[in-house]
Image 1 (cartoon, rainbow, N blue to C red):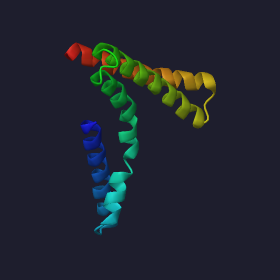
Image 2 (tube, helix red, strand yellow; image 1 turned 60 degrees about the vertical axis):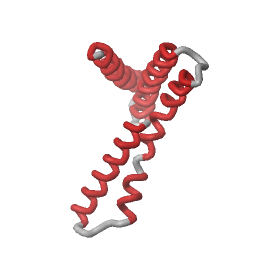
Image 3 (cartoon, helix red, strand yellow; image 1 turned 120 degrees about the horizontal axis):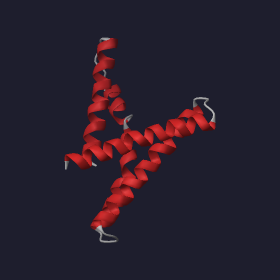
Length: 117
């Protein structure tokens, strides 16, 4: 959660700096709005945080919570990728391919993380 908050703040601040450079004036309230516009980054990690907090509350084992979080995020990658492609006008088969590619990228990241540890 802290990583997501820091990432959202950094992303929003980068947008604020870019906006100020392009407009060439100080933006006071715009900076805060640009930082707060990164809320989807925070919202994206909330299900995972909830799943992992369930392990802290001893509702299930830590290994089960990690597996559930990885499964949830992998399925979410597929769903979001397929939905985005379909919204962009692709057919369902093409959308499923896009979702599968997004899911595959997520699986590669999981594998790389496991190999690093």
